[in-house]
Length: 437
Image (cartoon, rainbow, N blue to C red):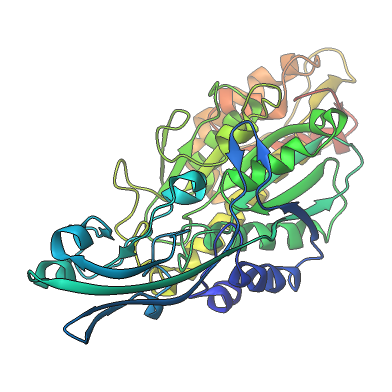
């Protein structure tokens, strides 16, 4: 929550002075590498917009101030051109944007960031204000600056024993939005802090960048060999509100990270729902999954079908809607996914014949209350554990991973792993590292 409180109310954009302030705050949390890309740069039709600042944004009628777009970071549409002049009500309305279903809110208008060639000017206003406007002439003074600058992308890498890299990604460019963007990077910063305290098998990289544009230019700047090491990823946003988890699957829906996410959310989340690629939200997963990169990328959020959440892209998306316990649950779920990535492996038998699991020499038989590592939560699944014990010996042929065993028998990975670890400690199996992704 501290990060979210610090960045609250900043007028961030793909490139702006407040975006630099936000990045400075994040660099105090982790030693990010700050990568820079000149504004005006082009790639595949994408253009990095210029540094943009609003100096004055007033609408007056008969000398009376009707609206001051400087009072809120969303008051002027993103990347608005400057304009000064007198216009009729009908002409003014062509440049006003609002959300009728939430009449007191100001809407986040970001379309021009991705189409800087449109050269529009305008204000975002509450619908309640829009309704009160009467016929007549209006004086508009909108002073905005478009200057050359540098778009910044934050990169933090934890090097593991393997160069195979898991990507975490969140965006940082939505002005005055807290759940949409910052909630995602706040969780991922905490995840990386936790990971930095342990030795890992795989490498992990966190990218915080302007939505789409930042990731497009970041990937375009990398050498193919480095991209080849990117094996799977999680895009994260909108995880601080009170909705249940929403899992948007990767392009195929059948990747290793899809399998892990479904399993962990089933057992570790209070509840969740899922849909296919780009059916829930549309973000940087499309950049990572693009031809030539094809990094399987799921998206994790807390969204309602179609409506996402009530404050989406509105001025009411503030720290007030953030639930600390939901952020903590998201950290825990993400760490549980990483636990599977780090621990999953195959099993190799070191015995022949049937083992008497109940013999004190092994003490591997599970009966109600017999194994404190399984705990009481497993007692209701006694039939599943009984079946697992009968099947297990045939799984020790390096043909099925621990995760696949857990999925097949509908049991939590962490419990199955803890149980199989006892087999290893008794010298009955070896844990075999093979390519899983």
